[in-house]
Structures are given as structure tokens and as C-alpha cells.
Length: 248
Ligand SMILES: Nc1ncnc2c1ncn2[C@@H]1O[C@H](COP(=O)(O)OP(=O)(O)OP(=O)(O)O)[C@@H](O)[C@H]1O
Image 1 (cartoon, protein in one colour):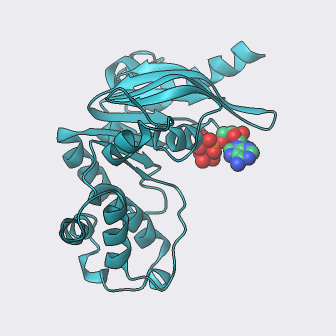
Image 2: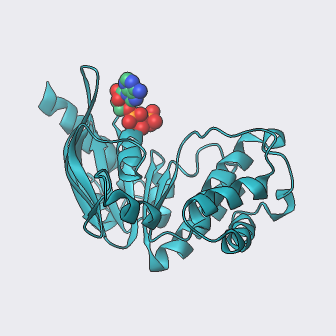
Image 3: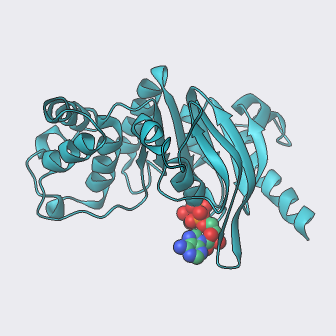
């Protein structure tokens, strides 16, 4: 169970998140928003990578940002960040293996798990390649593999399909569906097509606040034409427009 309690965050004087509360325990929760809505900030905070200025994040009741409980909470989740730094000389398997080990797995278990994760993301044939030789799309899949490898109960995926070709995107969507069968996946996206393919619940974020939280049927029902093939997208756009009008 992941719980965000009244989370707010600012960068200097810029408010990125404004009193966000969310709890989820399973399935795929898709966080949708336009550029700058606050998705990455929220994903980083939920994934243990950014301490929020206000509020708290609980994993099965353990506070992710409190000394004492962080070490219990952290191994139960993994984040696939939008960008990650790495040594270009490390080999793909070595990197995934090492990160799974850092998450608390034994070296042997991490070794096996890294192989399985690379297989799942379609990179088994590049397991001995140096990271510096991989394409951008391959690196995105390495980022996904390292998130999956430690077998966490909660997976936080920040724009997992960005930079992938259509076949790889379809592969990642299938993978997200498969891994969400027995865990919680929270992913961010601004591609409604991806969201429709995988999400059990959609949360729309705009200028740091939630403007919608419900399932796809509820989202489509808000569109001018609920049976239109573009109903989810139309509804998203009209929710954003009304939020903008509300701010004016
Ligand atoms: N390190 C930072 N310093 C200053 N402002 C930041 C920083 N990171 C994000 N912001 C600002 O906070 C707001 C939210 O940014 P965030 O990256 O969370 O949005 P996003 O929804 O993930 O956007 P995108 O879809 O473009 O990745 C934006 O206005 C952004 O300019």
C-alpha cells in the first residue's frame, strides 16, 4: 500500500505540487498531465528519490522519509526515473545486477533476477554490452529492467514509453499489465493511448493539483461524446481547459 498524505513541494518560489493525497494498493495507476504539471516531481517523491517539502509518503504504514522507517519502506519499491546516471563502461547485466543487490537482494539472487529482468524488457542479447554503446530506447529499457529486478511490491515508472519505437512501446505496455497482476504500478504519461491500454485508474495532474481521479469509464463519460474513440483524450483536454479557466 502506497499512501501520499498532503504532499506539497516547491522549487524556490515555484509550487510544483500542491497538497496531494493519494492511496493505492494494486493495479495500474496512471498519472497524466501536460509538460510541467508536476508528474516527475510526484514520481520522484513517491519513489523515495525526493523528500517532499511538506507531507509524508507511507509504504505499508512505514514513512519513506523518516529515519528508522525509511530502511523498511525503501526495499518495497523501485523507481524507473526519466533520466539516470551511469558509468558508460559498465555492462548492462552488471549494472542491473548491482542495483538489485543494493536493494537488499543477495548477490546470487540479484544475478539471476537481473537476467530475468533483461529478458523481460527484450535486452537479453545486450546483457554484455557496455551501457555507453546502447541507444536511448535501450537505455530506457535498462532503466525499466533495474526497477523490475528487485521484485518490488510497488513500481514507480516515470514515462516508461518515452523514446521507444512502436513495437517496444507495445512490449512495455504488455509488461506493465503482466507485472501489475500482483503489485502496484504507478506510471506517468502524457500519451493517452498508452494510458488507455494499461490503466485501471487515471489521475490527472494539472499545475500541481489533481483535477480528476477515477477509472477510464468515468473519464470517458466526461467527454462531450462518451462513445467517441477519442473520448479519453477529449475529456483530458476539457478537464485541463476548465482547470485553466478556474485559475483565471
Ligand atoms: N529542479 C527544478 N528546479 C526548478 N524548477 C523545477 C525543477 N524541477 C521541476 N521544476 C518545475 O516544477 C514544475 C513541475 O515539473 P515536473 O518536472 O515535475 O513536471 P512534469 O509534469 O514531469 O513535466 P514533463 O512532462 O515536462 O516531464 C515545472 O514548472 C518545472 O519547471
